[in-house]
Each structure stands twice: as C-alpha cells, then as structure tokens.
Figure: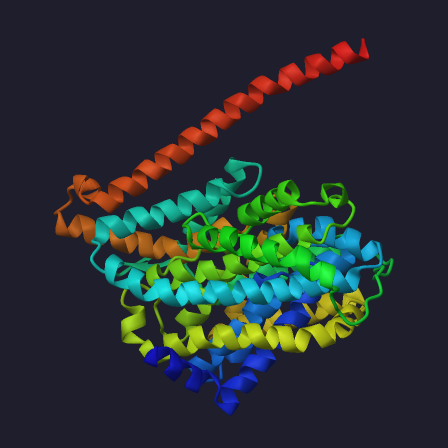
Length: 502
C-alpha cells in the first residue's frame, strides 16, 4: 500500500498530471478518427515522448492507451466504423442506438463502463502483478522459451480466418527481428552497414501501423463526406443505469482474464459478453435494434482486457495485443526491459505507472463526457488532410528513432509491406510480436542449449515447459478438428439448399 501511495505521489505531481491530461486528450482525439485504433495512436505518438523523462512518458502513454480505447468506441457508435476488431461488437448495438436518437446514451454507457472496468481491472493488476514476478523469476531458460513460443503460436492461430496468413505474418516478423549481428557476423543485412545493429522496432511499428494504414485508406478514399450522427451531452436515465451496471461488472469479469492470457486480446471476451447479455436481458427483442446492454457489456470487457494485457507484459515481458506490443517498444526506448525482476528493480517507476492508470481512467471520464460533441466534430476533418498528417508524424517518428535518412527508406519499404498485408488480409499483430519476441526466443534457446551443452532434451526438462507444449498441441488439435467439421458441414449445407430450391 505504501508503494501505491508513493506511486500516486509521483503520478499526481503537476508535471506528470499535465502529461496524463495531454495523453488522455491526444489518445482520445486520435483514437476517435476512423481507421485509427489505440495501437496506431501509441505508435504515432512515440516521438512525442523522446525528450521527456521515463516516468512522465509512461504516464502519458497510460493516458494515450485508455484514451485510444475510448476513442475507438466513439467511432464505432457514431460512424459504425470500428477502429479495431475489439470494437466490432460495440458497433453492432451502439450504432443502432445512435440511429434511433440515443447516441448520447450509447456514448455515456461506453464511457462509464470503461471507467468501471478499467478501475476494477487496474485493482486486479496491482494485486496480481507483484505475486506473478516472484513466481516466474524461478523459471529457467527452457520454460521461458516454451512460454514465448506459446505466445507466438497462440496469438498467430487465434487471429483471422486464415491460419496460413497468420503464420506468414509471424515468419515475416521473425525474419525482420533476426536482422543484425550474430556472434560477430552480419546476418540478413544484405550488405547494408546500417542494418548491423538491427531494425529499430519503432520504425517497424510506425511503418506497419501508421504508414501501412494511411496508404490503405488513401487507396480506398471516398470523396463523399462522412455522415455523422448528431450527439448532445452524454447522459443516462435511471432505467439506463439499471440496465447497464450488471453488464459492466460481467463484462469486466470476462475481459480481465482473457487479456492476461498469452493468447489474450479483447475479441473473445467482448463476443462472450455480448452473447451473455443477450441471453440474460429482459429485453432480448431490442438486440439488433439498439440494446444498451449490448454496448455496456462488451465495452467493459474491452477495457478490462486492456488492463489484463499489462499483467503478462510487466511480469513476463510478453505483449499479447498490438497496443501492448507498441507500449513495450516505449519501455525499451528508455532502456527498460519488462520481465520477472522488472517490478523489484524499478519499483518507483512501476508503481507510478500503476497509479497513473487510475488517474488516466478518472480523467477519461471527467474530460470526455463533456467533450463528446467536440470529438464528434473532429470526425469532420477531411480525410486527405487527416492522412497527410499521419504520414508527416510517421516520417518524423522514423527519423527521430535513429536520426538516419536510411530509416526513412526502411519506413517506406515496411509501409508498403503493411499496405500489402492489408490488401491480402494478413494480420499485422503476429508480425509485430514476432519482431519483438524473435530475438528473445533465440536468446533463451541459446542459453538453454549452452547450459545443457547442446542437448535439445533440456527444452522438456521443466514442468512449465511441458505444460506450454501441451497447450500448443491442444490448440493445434482443436484447429484440425474445427477444420474437419467445417469441411464436412459445407457439402451438407449445399445439398440442403439444392433440395429446398428443387
């Protein structure tokens, strides 16, 4: 408790509080804009923090993270345009509510639900994070190797409809992560001396998320202005409160555990929350037409999941979502390496960050409820101006990472790769996580083999490693079974349709 109070003392200093306010406002403003999710928001704003102290920068990122999550819900409700996959469920009922003249109520239940879930999730994070560190510090290199391999495997297989595309993205990321020097010899540098130190992860993140997305949207740019649903000050009636508070709590219970899992993310818990609320609702007939429970539950699950993702990132150094991966880049830019001993070696910084999550969550509610009409007007920014600004910040970020013109060329090449991935439906998250975890995976494998003098059997020498491999086998078996069932059901459905037509 004393450490948390010290964290609040740091987070509530005038300077850090100002950074928190700026983070919340910037995160929400950029997150509100269509096609820009929290991951891209954080990637775009990485250069902003290069000249500020580590604690202020990370406090600002906490605000950006939560602000970006809230901004995505605003876009989903007002434009039916989810900024990321986890906001799809919010759009289902939220946009229907907006079209029915209840945009204010939809925005209010999303904001308050985000606050409730974020607060509870942060409390759980504070309780669990210090206990997880001492447990994982006892693990050896074989266990770390297996856990990282599980994270790579699980994140890849649960994303997208095509597992092949997921693995293609993963191997692209691993290939990028292997560029540089290995045992004093250049590896995959193609004769460029500038690649000897590897490719800056900041350049990769900004190129794949920001530049790739901007090029993709520009290629499909419509000159027709966005049709924005008018919104007044968000408010909720007594009946709305009565129908929202239970979904907020249930959504939180779904979101946090899934966010903390190696195969985490908010897609599954938001879907489970939506299905649960539809079954438990006293007004099931409203679902599909604008049910407030369908916004309250999934939005709470989304934000609780965001808090949950910080648990494996702080305790293990494992990012399980795109946003967590980019935040990990921010840590590394300050020479900080999250992992088992991170919380004990950087107590003041970590507890200031955890306290700032409460501060950011509160600021999000206090500032954004009155500012909802302002964010709605922000959506009227012409798209060419918007994406020209994104390209400017992306270029600035890439140059600031290494102050090298060579990085600008890399930015363009990787940006075209990001564009191609969107064109062919290849998910970007496995690539980013492959870039981050690939070198660490190699390091743990080398350490394990060095200790065992080249005996690969050591990789199965710890119970945690065996469990991780067993989980991977179960995931693989589940995929095969699902594919077999799908292939068997397809001909049947076609035959039934032919019989009906006959």
